[in-house]
Length: 602
Image 1 (cartoon, rainbow, N blue to C red):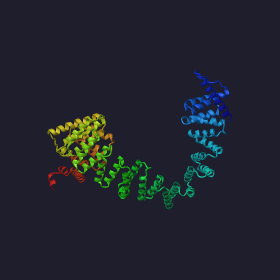
Image 2: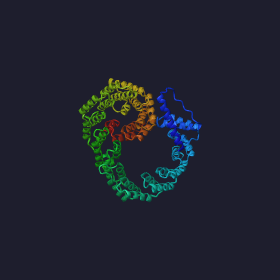
Image 3: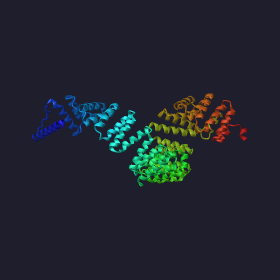
Image 4: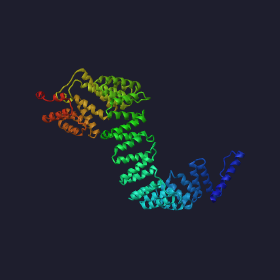
């Protein structure tokens, strides 16, 4: 009270002086009044409070508080104010100031609370426990003191002391949800499950129509494997919720309950209610749907329930791109390709329909071998998105699939004019090179037969294709020297043509090393280069590694191993590899051409 009276007196004096100066219109700077040494710290502290609370100037306030402490290092109010000002930025300094204030007046609850708080901020939990014990006794009507004290006891691995503290709080204040939750957790951590259930039952008895209370009890029964009681209280929680807008907490708890019991039909029925809720973000709904559809067997077994989820999304979010794609994929997996196609076509009328819709339509029309539709929708897409590199790459790729490589090259070359990034230029030159490579192989047997029979085409188109392919591969690697795929493709092209084989080996080895010798395709290329260089034993060893790593069971790898084995003189084993390749789907005529004519006739 002594400090407060002095502060008020000073404030009145200052206000009077300010008013007098305003009346006299004094223009010279106000001089800091001379104070008695005993009042200097009080004056600076007061000025600090004004700077902090009126002007919001934390920097000036902090400086004034420090000056007040220079005038009187034991001045508790300044220690308290400075501790409050720096607690967020300098918790240890705040702790030291709060301690000085507390030591200056341990009966002041404000000082006591701040000291306890700064100990928590600074991580001094051992000292904080003792201070909070005293604070609880000094301020027994504050439930937060019980909560923090219980947490500190638990941190000190004294759960029974924490429980005793919470019981005291419950006797004094009645049930407080947060404290009750802490108590249940402590009971469970000390294997007192029955007491936790009894406590939850008491809460339910007090408020039987509270869904959250029913959920808590149901969860405890569920944890204790009392399935029938858990089911009863989950049902009561569900019924206690509003029938029109059920809480997501209740629905998720029910879904988890059914999932644990592997009652997936009921789980998906509850999931449908979650999907219908406006409170659940679309992103989480899509994540859940992806989880349900990841396992194809689960998808097949619970198709009708999952279909209901997909329909909810389609109705609630009819123009969301993610939902359109999700529902279209669902239709495709259901065998409803035409319906998925129609869905995308309908959404082309949406404002700002994404180019991905056109991309999907064109691919599906191409799969259905409707070339006119492919050209129509691809033309529409390019009119709407003339700068789209993805669409032009798709157009070129479709030409390549149709073996119209010249048209593909024209599309890729035109696209080069629209890109500036080196990575995109590298990609385009790479696909141009691959297209020329395909042209160089037109009308010729596979690479193995060409090498085996020493076929060396010399027509002008072949020579041009080889020259252009090599130039394009060079340009691709110029823009992106570490492109592993391009190194592999270039090396394979050189090996097939039987030219620049040292360069082919260097490129193939770099690709293999860059992928830690774990890529079957790149190992196949490296082995084929070694084969073309006459290093047959090395080639067979590498090719065997490729086959072991090959997850796609590619028949071409078996053919290559057969060709290498045949070159080593073991024709019987080679023929076994060729037959396995034929069984795996390799071209029958190419396999037949590797056998003697007499055997072919048989």
